[in-house]
Amino acid sequence: MGSLTGIYPILNTTFSDDGSLDLKSQISLVNYLLEQGAHGLGLFGNASEGYALESEERLRLMREIAKEVNGRVPLVASSGHTGTDAAVRLSREMQDLGATALMVLPPYFLKTDGDGLMFYFEAISKAVTIPIMVQDAPLMTQVIMPPALLGRMAREIENVRYAKVEAPPTAPKISAVKNAAGDSLVIFGGLNCQFLIEEYDRGARGQMPGSDLIPELVEIWSLLEAGQRDAAWDLFTRILPLLRFELQPGMGVSAMKNNLHARGVIASTKVRHPTASLDGTSLAELAVLRRRVGR
Image (cartoon, rainbow, N blue to C red; front, side, top):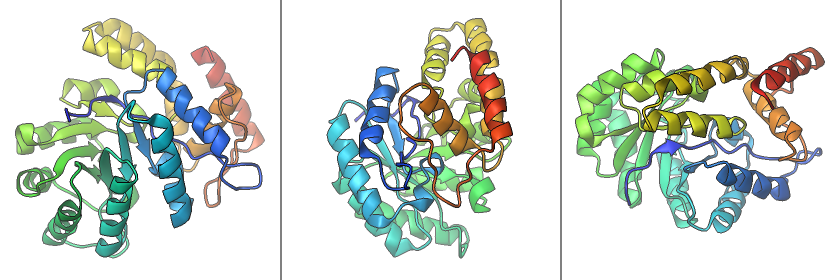
């Protein structure tokens, strides 16, 4: 398998108004993203409300999504856990159900040191045969992973092949990780693509945004790959106010679902507690930004 590259939206999990899984909308969203040119899909990340899913729901979703995608694009499934043994089991389950690669958060409840992080990722690597993407997301985990540690993981742990750098300022961190890891690590960006172009320039080979601005983000990526930088910046500048709105803590998932609902892709904007729904004023503000993007 070649290296993963491009725009990999984190798939929002769709719920009915009563809070149950809405598999019809889920499949609609999957096919919408593929039709819009997504190069792959990220599953069970923060924008997926993975933290609010029951174990059996996660397995059911993985099974149904893999069946629908049927190899058309790679699937990167989040399989980190607060316990090493649980992360190993979940990682193996995701692989068995069709994941192409794993996105793995470090333990964040009871934190460990550098040697403990090496042990955790090594244990997962020994249990699977697919690539591992280390998710460097200290805003969420309060776990700091220095560039030298990420480089060591790539050199010493067989299946660690990717890092998703979400440690702000992200662009300098990407440069530092590149210097530490060389070609042994492929770097992705996250945090909803707020520094997509700077990260691209510093060597990021993929991005994992939310699911609602994929037509625009795929076009920006294509423009960058074609060397059309001014056009890429023009389009990025147009969508930036909406990206900024979604980066407000606790507001992004509901905003994404409202945007997808407005486009007719999903049936409900329902989120699961503790995810918050936007209030009426925020919804009006979001509608203004959506119109300015041309949606």
